[in-house]
Image (cartoon, rainbow, N blue to C red; front, side, top):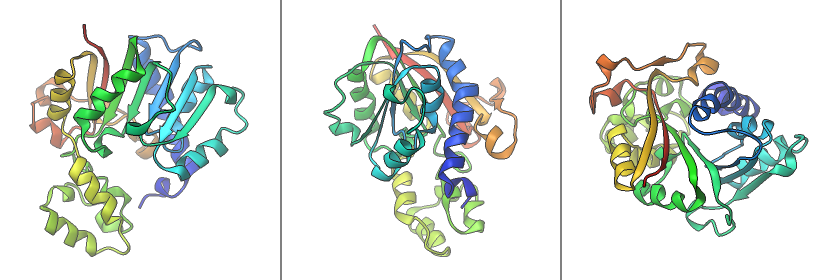
Length: 259
């Protein structure tokens, strides 16, 4: 397990860095990101992605199913100058009765690959979106070298074992048993919910979203702060449907409700 998975402040600052440097400008190409905007992050965790929006004075709502994560976010933002513009909820998005507002930006980063019934999820979030609003989605395709999130393993060997998650379930479970106190349940849930680029696009088209932009990365922008690697977009020659899942480390998508 990497230090960033143990140190919540480090993880928050990494999220803040990438969102501020790469994602806010990406969204701003197509939609304003100003203090008038209302932003919803689904699966906000400890809240690192919300900071660039809050720093700009946006009205930000974060929702996550884990109370511990929400508590850490509350503590982290306790003294933020725009704290009154931040609303944090611990709730299942499918049961989010407290979300009575609609939003200019719905933000979903490294979350959809953890969510069961992704078709239902992408249909559901429309009700939280203003007619002129946009949805930002970023995720690692399931088949990429660490698409199974095995980097969270306690074993150094297992955490550095690419494509291990593509093994059949029984063999994958056996491999995980070689480690010490591994998060097997979490990793197997990710195996069940992992999503490819093609499956995501199929859902997007089925739910009648319009794609404003889609950018695939050979080197994820988040790797700059994590591993000091410069982001690298996938070149057209390698953008081959289905095969690209095995070496694309992240896809960025900006959507709006289609007419």
